[in-house]
Image: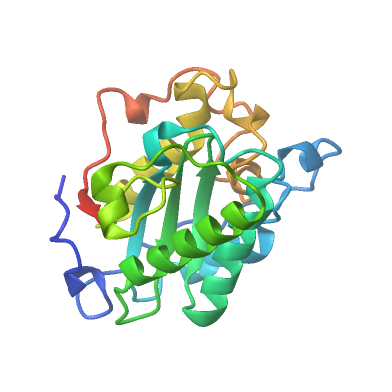
Length: 235
C-alpha cells in the first residue's frame, strides 16, 4: 500500500491524483422510518453533497483525524455539536471543500474531504474550524482545563490537541479502507455494538447509497483486520 506524501505537499492535487476506476451505480434505497435517529443533530446531508457522482473528478481526497485536548469527551455534547457544525459550515463557505464521510465521537473525529482541483490548503481550513469552534465554545461558557506553560506561551487554548492526522487517499482500495474505518470507529471504541446505532456519522447515508448493508459492522469487518490508518501529523 502506498504511503502518505509529506505534509503540505501538493502531490495529491489535480496534477497527480488519478481518479479511481469507475464503480457500479448504487441502488436507490427508500428511507426507512428509523432513519432520523441516525442523523446527527447538525445535518450533514448538505455537506456530503452529491459526492457519489463527483468524487471521481481530479482533486485531492484526504483522511483526517482531530482530537480534543487530553481527549476530553466534549464533542458530542448538546452544547458543542451545533457549534462544531457552524464552524465547519462557515469555513466551507469561505474555503470550499466537500465532506465525503464523517464520524464524530466524544473526544475525536474522523473525516474524508475532497478539496477543489489544485488546492491542498487543508491545514488552513482546519485552523479556521478549530479557532471558530474554540472561540464559540468558550463564549458559551465552557471551562477549559489549566493550560500548560508551552500552550500559554503560544497563545493556545486547551480545547484541541495540538496536532492532527492527515493521509492523502491514493486509490479506491485506500478509499474503502478509510471509509470502513470511519464508520466502524464507534464500535471500535465500544460506544455502540453496531455502526447503524451511532447517530453522529454518515453511515446510514452510505447504506442508502448501496455501499453497505444496514447490518454491516455487527462483526469486525475483514477489511480492517490488522490494519491501521497510514498518515502524517499536521499542525
